[in-house]
Length: 640
Image: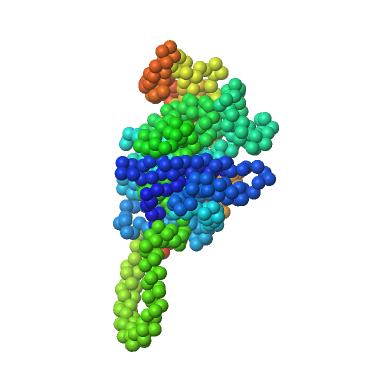
């Protein structure tokens, strides 16, 4: 896929729900310098047309900041983007584009000609293959964004994705150990982007909870309009009732924490060596006082707020302190600018190719002038050229005849190759069952982890007098239950077609959890057993076993497990490290970072869960002559 051209000066433009955020960056010999930035509000009342308000804000911003004539990179948010991660083998770089396009045509729904798409390639954890993150948006969404910027007189050179933009900024500017899996959480008005990267590997997910959910909580509690609720959010820090006001949004924040825990739990299940220590947070939502500490307490990781630049410089003519005060909300714009400078790790560009060509011609005015001169010269000499071509017609016809003869020979070679490829499909097709098996077990894993996530957040299973701070001698309160292991039966493709051809003993899913000693473990065990017994196949598992059938309602699908039994309970320990790099001595107020090994008595409980026996899957289409597998509903290695 073509990437955008590299520029020496660029504007990164983040079009948010309530404001425009723009940052002007320049590439210099020793790195990158921030030349300027601006935040322009977008009217957000019911009587204002959203599209007109965005265009007006863009025009105001462009005129005040003199943006016209300087290249601009903008972004689309996660809710406007279809994202899918696939796994492909390591290929010759010249073949990657074609291979990914074949996969994209199968993975991206709808008319492929009506979408704009791109991809980001990164090495997978196993080192033997690559993870490909596909990004696609409907053509009308991209065209609408392009038209808005054109009305404002802005020179658009690229359209990227907000989650990748934040990743580009954090990966370039913030320093972490190479072995650490860095978690980035960007909470926007309409969606939340969760990004995990370790070295060059990259994994991301869009979460449902966003800043608008917090706004709606204010609207409902205080019976105010949306605009008044937004103002109230901004004034919380100055209010004497800040703690009481934050209680209003605690359910939404708890749901956000639960989504993050489930997502990181899934990532950990796929990458068992991953070590989480820090969560970098971005977005205006984290201006709420106490929110960062709330997240730290419940996630158990150090929360890093964007309050300082580590690699990027600020121009001497710009108020550095004022810029850093707003940095928390500028992560997307910063990352877009870095991509435009050619310094981002991800280079996704959804701008139509024709417009990229127009932009390139504007940047290389000398090339356009040469082309115009050539057109003029051709027009003057057209008569002479036509005469020469008429004289050459005979030679051209002779050449055509020769090429046709060569084509006939190549056609025979192509038919021979096709005949050689055809038997290979008979060897490859049995792997369709393996693909369905992988997709099915992804569904099993997703549902079990979902149950654990809900149970972990159930504070009714904890004593009411439990203290919150382990450093004051109290018990920790991260969650009610911890996942120790989840063993799912492996498939021997040389021995059986599916795991359901095996005996019941071989179809067992073994789940081990640790319940802290302070929790009501008998109630936890009973609740977990009841929820596991109530699980039915989710859409992922159903589609894996029935790729060609419609998905029935949940209550009409088979149960996931036929038997769930608790087989063993034994004493155990939960160990973790309490890290607080910002801790200060309560007496001297000196910075005394904490890094303490902590333990907690617990009980290890083992559950044996026997998989059900769903009906055999429908036959899947065979391998086509092109070599691209025709297995709809196959494994999605990017996550459930």
